Length: 371
Length: 205
Image (cartoon, rainbow over all chains, first blue to last red; front, side, top):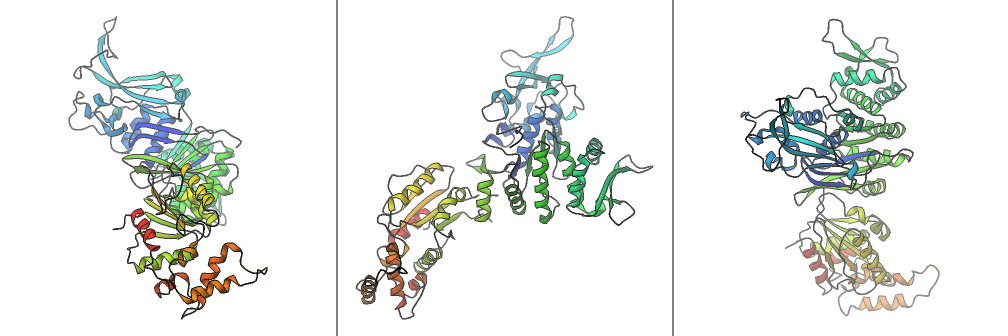
């Protein structure tokens, strides 16, 4: 393999449905499968949170995406079950019972492990008479104390944050510079697709660069006649820009959406892919809206572009067609390694079973169920 | 649809013998019989078969062939690598191993977990005692000259069984059908340990 991978393995402790999940090996392109509720999306979330090094804004997005950011009726902050951050921790225990930190990182590599722990603060009067929150010492008085999070990278504390403003209400946060330097470059495609804002933002980053060609190539997987694509605002419109395509033999540009849901999905995946250059691409339910005949070509493109632009890809699926297409593309692509990760519940815990290219080829040929 | 219980066999003949034995003994078939198309493929893909989602019990039926020890050792190594604690020798009643968090695994070496041989040697146990044609088939096969096109020595029992089947009331019945047609005696003593092993492996009452 020409490029090294961002992550060769991944271990999760105490996050969402995972008490302890250990994935011993990762490939350049990783497809996550398993039944409903075994945590396919949770694993993407864990990778996302890891990529942003536990950014509070990511935590807020994770909570809001599942409607867990809504404050419960009783707004008394001393009732710790009201703190939404507990939803990110395994078993969602009230914060004072949340003694074990959440840990995300490569297997047995503490210096690249992210740790998020609940800590308690007490109000103190500073030397100039100002009020400030300081880490509580000894026994915590749950009425006077304020919970917060402490984020560690390796054994270094990179952020301490008392929840003066709870995560759901957090609109912006100035992160320390070194915190930002630690973050991994990444893009994320949710199951229901990208927002118009994200599409426009990512298009602007690659417009008129050679990466535009990769996006057009992706659109041609469905509509062979695509010659050009652009995002155009409407005069007097709401400011949103609409993706338009120029097809061979048709003089007027057409709206991308008029060519079907699949085109829109491909456009989003392709933009997220090329924008993840040198980083991590996360795609929830990659096969959504895509006919299986397109999936093999899509995987071929993902494998090739991921290798060329040094991207590590993580996607989820339920579909056997999608896995079969993944297996074929993976077997054909000598440069990139593909790994299928099946999550399943055993004795109350979620565990990962890995299928590398060799195992996946056997499973496909012998019709062994891997989902 | 995930299959919870699977019985891996080497070929079609094994598959049919099992179908007809189960039918005769009215054993509910709560498992899928999977023809692996030969011993090599069965061994090479076993590691992945064990990883099938939702798999609860996996039975493996293979021929002991000429060297029962090396066949047992090959399976033992594969399953040890997959995390199972394997006995040093196969039990006469068939082997069943369990490991928390993994599917239960059973192994049966044809014909009887103790002697070299194959499916046809097991079938030979089902020939009614004192059967005249069976004696004749042995003599007949024994008298064949060792020409180049003759079967190799390891397939002697196979040649005898098929010779015998060729002489039944309806000549040339396949092995499985010979059970249903009662040419072969499915109540023979050799059948019991095999059925007991299957029942235990797949929790059949």
